[in-house]
Amino acid sequence: MAETESTGSSRSAVVTGASSGIGRATAVALRERGWTVFAAARRLDRLESLAAEAGAIPVELDVTDPESVAALADMVAAHGGVDALLNIAGGAIGVDPAEDAAIADWQAMYDLNVLGTLRVVQALLPLLRGAARQHCGADILTVTSTAGLVAYEGGGGYTAAKHAEQDLMDTLRLELNGEPIRVQSVAPGLVATEEFSLNRLHGDADAAAKVYEGVPQPLTGADIAQVIVSILSLPPHVNIDLAVVRPVAQAAQHKLYHGDLRVDPQRRIVEASASPAVPAAQKGSAQ
Image (tube, rainbow, N blue to C red; front, side, top):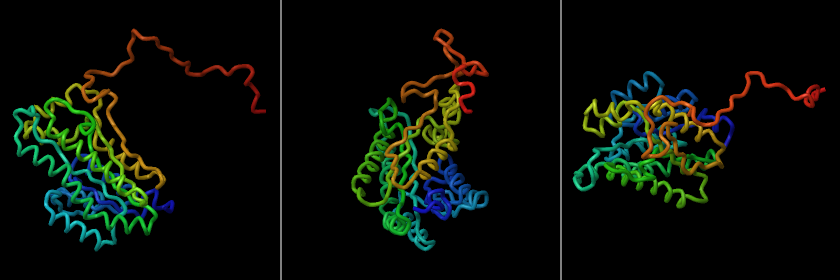
């Protein structure tokens, strides 16, 4: 892959879920680096705003609708194909225990997070192969979640869907082995976006705000976008199977610190001097 391609110039990407949060931030970050970006999501008005701001190409897309996904593939083909597919569309519904969970919510989460990702992969994989042949590489990168790595109470439907989505990526990597197509996942922990918790909690803004209350510097959509861009910028033979990204305050899915981060004064602390002395033996060594 040529240097201009590895740095983003002249490369193109489809970004699903681009109307808000991580998807929108990723579309903006790629445009800033010279990528052609097909920004795909259901809310066309938001995509048109993104197009005006960043120059992305807006594509109305519902990943749960096969005809909508097919139309996306046709549009991308008409524009000359695509080098990278970024599956970012997804979401959670509810925090009910499994005993009380609505089957419809679990079905909706599976359709969105798993089958939606699968539909888009199936539709765009022939185009990605064409790019891989022409440019010696292509990318499929999916934003999963740390919920796809460990279970937690009240998250059964979401963790089940995200485990399945992660397994889909791991399976796809095996099945594409031998082709110059990277299959990579980014699993964020706590990310404060404008809609994730609000949608999960059925529009309860107060409850959504409490998810992040007191947490020092939760991740932002821009943080995850930076990770994605960094991964895509690596040499084409380097595959990041899974990047787990959490805020410093979140040591694990179940361990989240609230309050100001500080060095424990009860622990041993050694502070370096502002101007460390140079050992006598090293003085003049440059001569």
